[in-house]
Image (cartoon, rainbow, N blue to C red):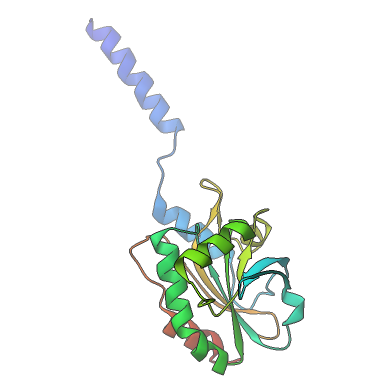
Length: 192
């Protein structure tokens, strides 16, 4: 191969690398985090959920202005991360209730998948809060926690006061990291 041809190939590679922006996860996280603001009105939603071994309709209108709300978004049913996150929230749901709050968990799975998941991982109606099916991805998109590349919810925890305003939120990017329910709940309800 001639030196001239190698030079041309190197120039072409350099031109391509200038056009293709390298993926920067820190920049992406910053953009996503900046999108959801505290003290902004939380989106309202209706959906189908599984609670106490039943498939039931749920609407934020039913409990808005009555109680605070903690939303746990998770990726998929049956994943170790989902099991861990839901168990952690389940362990704190009584404390959350004493703060006049209701907990909901949301993923893009169907209500039938939620039902099977609860039967397998949380027998005897052990989950103390509904699992909401967001098959249209409208809820996760409205709360700006939908990962458009994978089509699933980012692991997120959002606290909404009874006025319907977002008090705090956190998004976890790594499956090894656990939600800190204590600090999120404390911060979220400090002034509500």
